[in-house]
Image (cartoon, rainbow, N blue to C red; front, top):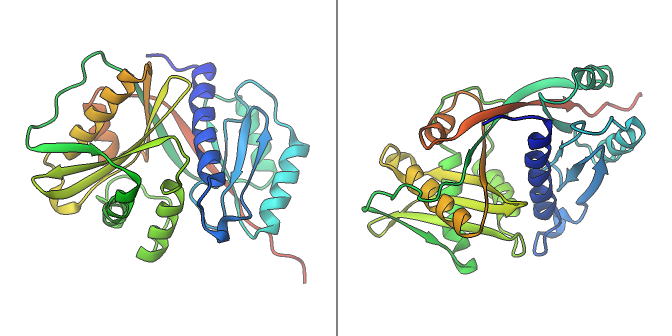
Length: 282
């Protein structure tokens, strides 16, 4: 599989649209009323509320030059909210773009890997001891508890650029991102026997199956839960007519290793660039 700027644009902009739906979805709490989405150079600038992981500028510079005036207006709005600007920049953009952003005060914060695979005609069958259920809205609280417990106990691999958040803050952020009613997102719970042990989500856009939000409770890792969740999502993506499945991971993590075992290949990397909020002069 070959990744060029056109494929990166297709993937990054599908993720941008997902983030925008999450930011603007109905049913989000009043604290997120300040959310806004602005276009920028082929991509989107998404602000979902202070501290939200959906706050990002993504999909820019892949087939359009950077509009610095529009970026300056976005930076000003972020600054007024007391929030640093986060740009997720594909390495398939022109190198001059990174230099321009560096000149504007952006600094390298970390990296993330974009992996993909064709949606197979016959996904692998999961372990018969693991069942995967697509859940209804009234089961979201159970899904959220598993997600929080999973993300609060990361496996310690790779390089985590973001700090570990307190449990209640993590629960708020995950709940706001994945809990809205109108996201066109499927949420799954994995069970071993009667015990809920893992969760995941799937969003489909432009023929892409975006695999997201996947986690397993620490005491049940290494038992095929993630394999089963990937297989079920690939089957559902196939049934929906998707041609490509995509997942984003931190580099060098077991999450990356797990999906590569399922046939995902590294397509490209995004550099995470941060422009901090500047203090007003005294």
